[in-house]
Amino acid sequence: MDKLYLLGVDPGLTNIGFALAEYTVKDGLHFIAVTTACMPASTCAAAKVIARETEQAIAQSKTLLDWLFGAGFIGDAPLYLCSEELSTPPSSAAVRKAGLGWGVVLGTILGRYPRAVALPAAHPKAIKHYVARNRSATKERVQLALEDHHPELQAMWPLGPRGGTGLVEHAADAAAALLYGATTTAFRSAAALL
Image 1 (spheres, helix red, strand yellow):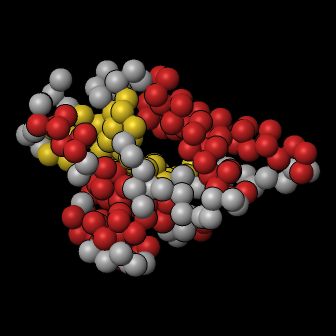
Image 2 (cartoon, rainbow, N blue to C red):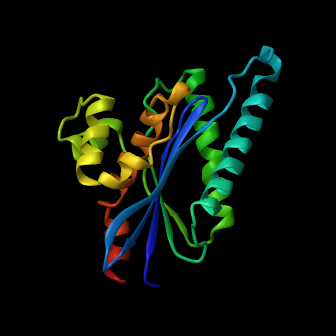
């Protein structure tokens, strides 16, 4: 084993951000790709909402697997999953939907890759503090801080509507969660064994 992978995920309601990085002793941590998967908003009647949300979550996980293979991910190396905690009130339908999406993605990855390890989800403020040195940093400040330390990200951000960067916030949150995950004891211990 000469490398480790980290997958950062920003779970969301209809958009989910992904960031993939590789770690080697020689080169350290470098990003391979970042992206955002967009799912159509649910327009189902109340009785069909759960079924529709499950379909969306499964579609997200298929999108993730397609993206991992397209990004050059090698399935025999250990993969560490890093995520931002869901920050919406726990009783809301938004948390149920985002949690369902993340649960299916997590289950898909852990089922597909026996060497995958799910790291504990981190609070968004802890991630912001680690990346931007400010617990209440704006999304733009987080993105700029990421680019300062990893300039390769500037060329990887997904484009939003009309060529803008509207989808960058989800990819940036995933990249920030990934960097925070790289500081965990579980990841650092595995990296020390390379």
